[in-house]
Image (cartoon, rainbow, N blue to C red):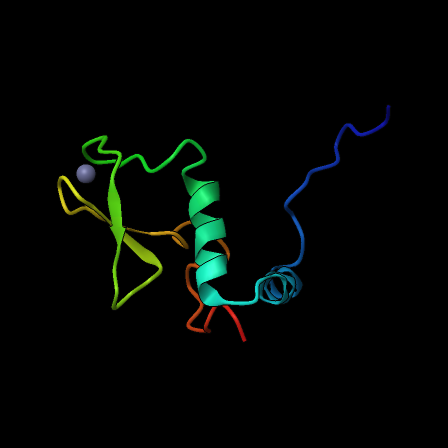
Length: 89
Ligand SMILES: [Zn+2]
C-alpha cells in the first residue's frame, strides 16, 4: 500500500462547497446530515453534557441545549461556517 502522505479532506473549498450544496435536496436534509456528523452518537452538549437539543425555528442550523440553553450551529467549524449562502441553492 502506498497511501502514506495522502490526506483526505483537503479539497479545494469552493468546489467542495458546490458539491456539498448539490448533494442535498433541502436545507433541512443538509442540516440533519451535519448534525449526524457533529453528534454521531446523538446530541451531546459541550457545556453541560446534556443529550437533548432543540432546533431553533428562526435559525434551523442552530441547536439549543434543552438543559442549559447553549446554542451551537451545525456549521460551526465546517467549511460552511462563514458562508452567507443558503446551504441549498
Ligand atoms: Zn447544555
